[in-house]
Image 1: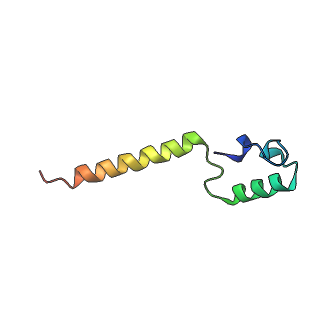
Image 2: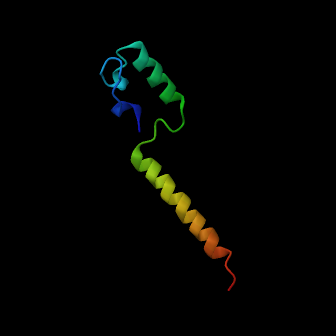
Length: 64
């Protein structure tokens, strides 16, 4: 999940707005993560690519 959809438990505001120190700290932490900026559709695309690659490898290594 991206941080722009999260709601802070401390101030009940969106984390993306950074209204309190907890929001700002979590926003900074998630921005540093390589997976924090990916949306759900991008993660799904990566998962499908991984599955397709694994299936291609299995098919390529089967004896004829």
